[in-house]
Image (cartoon, rainbow, N blue to C red; front, side, top):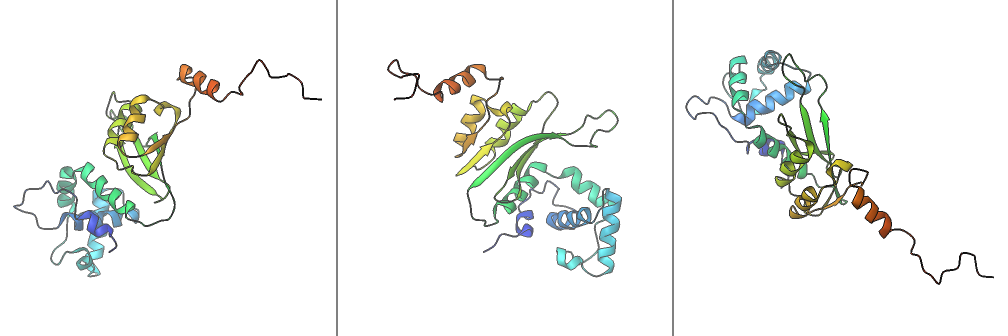
Length: 221
C-alpha cells in the first residue's frame, strides 16, 4: 500500500495540550503547505488562503468539518511544532517513492539567502539530498558555534543509509563522519584535498605506477 503525504503528516508529534485541540495537526500543516505552494509567505496570508478554501467548501478534504484555522491558531500551532518530527515525516514520505537504481545521498551546507533579519544571523542549513527519490531526506539547521562537520555527525546519526552511498565536499573527509556513515549502513565517497595532506599523500602513493629496479626506462627492442 502506498504511503501518502497525508499518512506521514499524521505521524508528526503534536505538542499541543489535548484540551482545546479543535483541528488535527496534519490538517493545519497540509493546509499551510498548500498555501505556501500557492505563494503565501506569512501567517496572515496563509490564514486568508485557508479562508478562501473554506468558502469553496473544500476544508473537508483536509479533515475539517466545522470552522477553519485562523491566524491565532496558526501562530499557536507553529510555535509548538516539533520541527524534527515534521522533517522525519517528510523524509519518510520522500523515501516511500519506489524508484529503481542505487541510492545516492549528497550532503551539502548552504546559507539560506534572505534569512538574515535584524540581529538574527542568516540560517545555515545542512541538507541531505537523495538523487533516487529527488528529494531532501534530512536537514539540520546549524546552531551558533556549530560547524558543518559536527552538524553532519548529528544528521547522519538520525538517517537510514542502508545500501546508500553518501557523498560530500572535502570538509566531510573526516574519520568521525566516515565511521558514522558506516554505522548507518552506508558507504561514502569524499574528495581528498590539502586539508588532509597525509591522507592525500598516501592515496597518491597507493595509486602511483609501481616502480621496479628491473624495469627498463626504454621500450623493448
